[in-house]
Length: 150
Image (cartoon, rainbow, N blue to C red; front, top):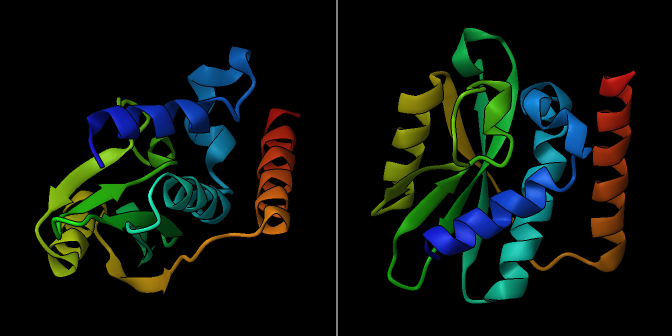
């Protein structure tokens, strides 16, 4: 995992949005953090099966009473890259989905609390996804985006 991979993933996430709507990233991705996180985890697993992909779930994120899913990506060198593929719903001016890099999963959870507030925990480890699962996530994401545009 490196900055180039993070940028590639970010571009793929943004390609889910209609081009003319890129200025509304947060609004359009607001109801899809779970599906987008799982889809991104599947992309990362396809790049390198030795990488550990973990979904972290936060409650009362940014004092909103909302829940939110982000990814902790464990690398071979035991670092964890904290990625939020839908970061713009809470931080519309952020330039990157990379929240930070931690030396342990516990430290990644602490970074989540520092950024978003609320309560954070490990939700699940994401294994390789089937083509059907990826298609289902994409369908839900596109439906939510289309519903937001109307």
